[in-house]
Length: 252
Image (tube, rainbow, N blue to C red):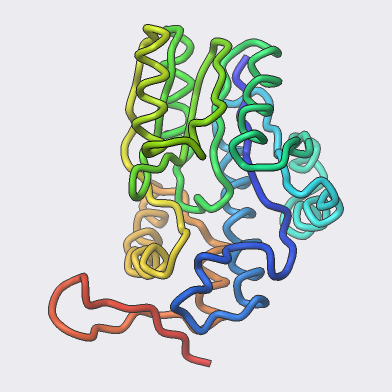
């Protein structure tokens, strides 16, 4: 069995994409609109993977109603029925992830966990993780910005405690975990999640290419995110020469 877990915050104003607020003029309402679009596209793409079950693990535990409201807004009843909702348990991200991984590992099968701010993650990437796990007992990692990870896949009992809040960077900590248990190991292509203004600017710079890829049936377009970006008037301006000089601009 292939189980896909989406690790997400409930869409609550003032509690989502707080790092993205720094250095931008985005309001809490803007950030909530963007986050809802991120989560909608991430879950929409999840439906196109080979996962047998899709489980949306949310935080805080009081946020179930907000999650259900979002799914109702963006999905048909038939699609909604494919999602299982479960609260994250624990006081910190590190503990919540370790608890979720333990519970999912106890169910058996191949488990892939992704974040909620990956509207551009293609279903084929997730399927590649499942395909590897169907052949080997191991660990699959998807690297993101600054030593983070956007995907963790496994099919054996592992203790992830300390990976995210201990010493070192996440990617290295996870690689050491695989080495410690002598697991087969696969490193996927790098995909940047959208955490800070530079990430969003990079995403905006790729919109035209993504839409063209979608017209050629080569790419699953994050339509909800692109729509939200355009409704918020977000664009990228050149302040000098080279990509490092590009900055996020909002035209009200």
